[in-house]
Amino acid sequence: MLQIQLADDFGNFLADGEKAAAFRFSRIDPFVHTYEGITLDFHGVRNMNSSFANALIANLVSQSPEVLKKLHFTNCNARIRVLVESALSLGIEKLRGKKFEIA
Image (cartoon, rainbow, N blue to C red; front, top):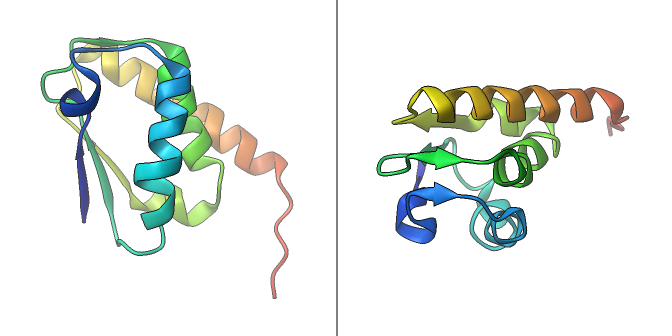
């Protein structure tokens, strides 16, 4: 299980979508198929904006159906939970719009 403590890298307010995208490219994407689960831990995070949530979560989920099954979220306060759910919905919508080839 890949466990990521978001506050360690971003502090208590997750606000920069570009930093979230760069983090996803370097710290999550290379390991998506290596780990059976990926936990995003929001311990110590008080707030997050939609730019960060969408860049990190929605774009991660939109990669493939398998990614959604691997994601877990912990220590989400009410504000964080709403943004995580919204980003998940956006990622699922993007996923539905993609066509996958089955080899």
